Length: 470
Image 1 (tube, rainbow, N blue to C red):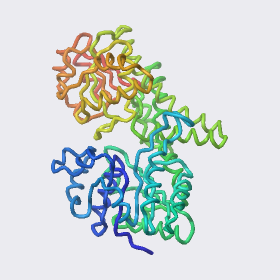
Image 2 (image 1 turned 180 degrees about the vertical axis):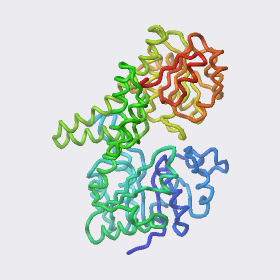
Image 3 (image 1 turned 90 degrees about the vertical axis):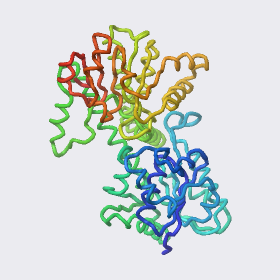
Image 4 (image 1 turned 90 degrees about the horizontal axis):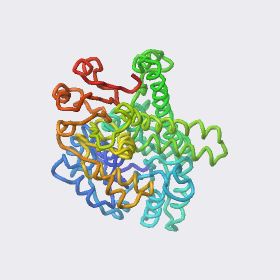
């Protein structure tokens, strides 16, 4: 069995950057090179100022600082990195298709296919190819077909090694994983490739933490895991609407059912809805696959998880509008948080985007503060959504003029008609809410989309506070 000495990762994003940094830290004898065509992103990864890393994750800067320049490298020289590697991770983006067959549901695999073709063209020696991006089941077969057609006599083994990282705790998830999943062909050469990757992770994980399966089970397990987690969130959010109608408290309901050992307490936090790059994309992909294999009832079941999540966002926005006397036209609505969750600067599918869309459509001014998300990113998120919806450039500019961003939270909430908490950043709990109340229009509303504020304390100040499911 060949010992891995040189690893290349295609893609320096939210998966590739942290994962390769952790592998480099724990495997000092292996050279790890992360490559990306985005020169600006690579420059940020190489910056002496660790605050400029393109991804914010607690603990990431420290890991990069320890390994970078020793056995961890970031480069735009893709061809050289591929040529030198024994093992190549594919960690490029696999967004939901916005065109053609499967539009709105299927995963867009064009970047993965381009990676496979580039690997096939350049390689002159045997390599292990590792799927790290979230991919539909049977993608490995497509990759194998492309790789085997290179005509150079090179042997490729394709493995599936899905990531199970939660943004905000990615470094902890990598260094203290509850499990790593590796799938491969159950042939002698396939099993040998699996063992090569097992040996990499065995530098810091025990055998019990490393699960091996066939490649198809591994690919499907990632989609299934995200679907189950998202299902729990949509389930408790569906009940939050009933709690509001019946004057029950969704946190108390969640506690009551979460103490049942068969259910457990995790992912039962009612909120304005889940976001991020994975949950919605993976469920829609699962729905598409089920329909492709003529399983309409299964597809409809999983699609309802996404439908419920979308409903929760727009229900939250509607609650703001109706509470503010059925109109927010010309009113200042302050957003605390734009990232889809705390401890990350990732905004993909953030609930804040869709709540803002609804309120702007009703004429509101949106004033945003997020400790890690820039004005450029916030406006780019809205522009992308409106372009996707087919709005003209003139209309987009008009709507963007209704968005204001701040570097200080007190400026964002000054003289606002309502505050909406859209991200559960810890700092929001410790704000001087008494001063905020004094500087807001009365009645002063707070819509707690993450249920992180002390309702009794806020009400005592004078706020009309409306939490999800309360």
